[in-house]
Image 1 (cartoon, rainbow, N blue to C red):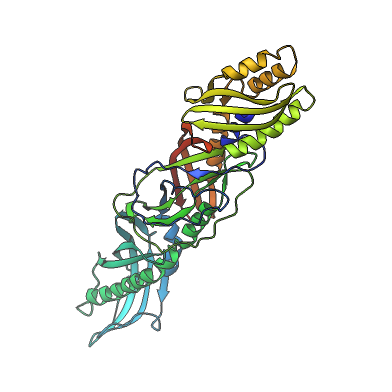
Image 2 (cartoon, helix red, strand yellow):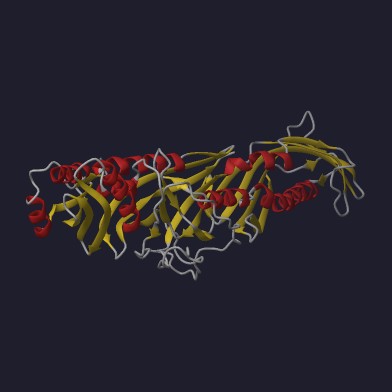
Length: 473
């Protein structure tokens, strides 16, 4: 048999059915409390709840630059040979043939700048005014050498794509092209060919970059996952609803072989016990940059309420069944609390008609991770009433049932906390899409305090950790 206290294990993951109302925490958030938000209309069956604390949930995003290599290689192939029809014509000269072989593109990022560098060998035939056709790099000569460099600034666009601007181009010809027999220097003409090739590549990079780095699908997937309830226990009886309100991104920052940013979701979390809550329908908001420093870890304060009305209903059903065939029957259970003082009223009939009362003090033992009802005992009036019928079996039965159900006034929640941590780790780790990996860790998930309101037991907990996404293909 279990009484009302055993039901408190539902708060953090015990596996029985039913539903409980849960409200978000009112503890202030350390950073990011700059949003003006509105709350949805409260459930008309219960009093309106205060607005919950704003949880700040940053997801660090690492974009590995080699993910851009296939797109860039398609724009600037590793080798190519262009005939006159495709060879770029320049002022005062005609390009007849141009071919090159380049080394792999070297991609790097530093602060907000993105660079592409490569070494190249080329050969060409160009027509010069009054000098006929000049060529360089054809056998028996070796191909001429050049270095190409492109540097551009990356920035967030409003459509969740990454754009480039402020592009700088540098093409350096290491080897000159002097045609000795004609006594001419074709180097300037060939520099024009290489410059034209680099300019074309730069324009193509500016065009394809927003499509190659479209972050909207990723942000939308993350946003929708936050709209969906998350099971906090293996039996799907306890649910975390993050209820996201808005989303921000951090400026792009280069870090060698990758650039990083953060997608920061702001929500008002709550915990709901019972059946799976419906998904929240809310479209991804427009992109906005975060104001100030971007947080690196998430802190999710949650407050769970176990209403006395629900406790009364369950405990009444349990004790009615337990005492149905005894001479002292329980007909109703009523729980009242003020601060940490708890009073349980048992309406009884049969050998004794009236109300018996148990009194206790509610306390959270952090070291043992237990919810405790200290000094759980009958009130003086109830003890006196029970002593007058102590020869019967009914009174001791009720007393034993209460003590057994409360495990002597101790409800261990450590296992439930561990279960919650395991379920959250499953949510925070795994592939989101091909080449997109979500990884996370939880540093803490602790009950910080327990208490009461005029209508419910209240458990306040905090979830702390880190989450990140790596885009590598």
